Length: 120
Image 1 (tube, rainbow, N blue to C red):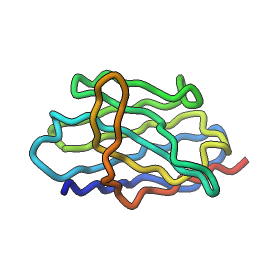
Image 2 (image 1 turned 45 degrees about the vertical axis):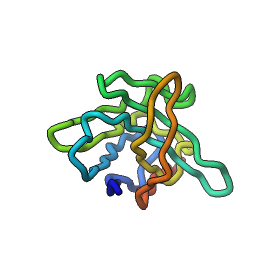
Image 3 (image 1 turned 180 degrees about the vertical axis):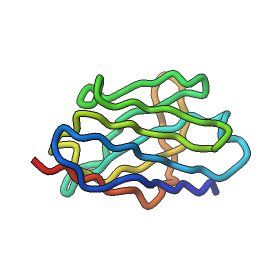
Image 4 (image 1 turned 30 degrees about the vertical axis):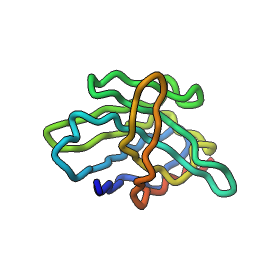
């Protein structure tokens, strides 16, 4: 099973920026679509962004224009650059390696996540 390790979370003021990283084990990283999800207390986990094997990115409306997902296949790592952070972005962020056809289908394999807290 692929191991996913997220890092880079922290406490930031509203309007600030953070960069999250997710390192994946395995030899076929470049052939897999990847995604970032987040889950706030009392809420369902939601898709934030996903990136195809061709590095085409798709975003949730709530983060479009503020967040950027990218991947480095040499490092088996994806990133989430988060700018203009808002208190409503506060959540635990998880990466996922899944299947992308007409939509992104997450696997059941999740890392521990990394906490992002945005203060107002």
